[in-house]
Image 1 (tube, one colour):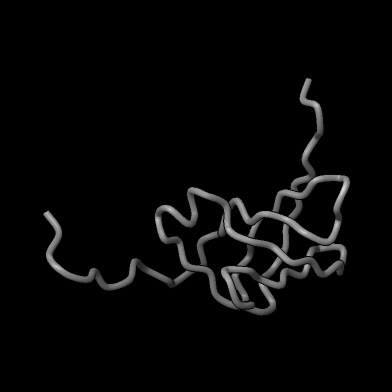
Image 2 (cartoon, one colour):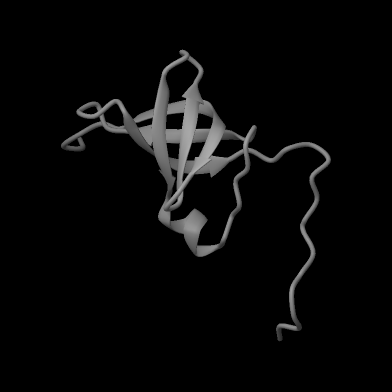
Length: 86
């Protein structure tokens, strides 16, 4: 059993803040500040206002969280590729 259990909640991005942070409105109408998880940052997964996300939070601080997943929006295909990578 883990030392601390993480809470996993669904939410929607309301605002993009400086320094890679986002204001997220959770399903229970609670507003938190969240940042992107390591793999999302590593693979440059972009998030915009209105995206549905899954947020992990610790039970000790219910005002901050980490975005671990961004749900795909219908009709949004892959963006244009930059440069010629081989």
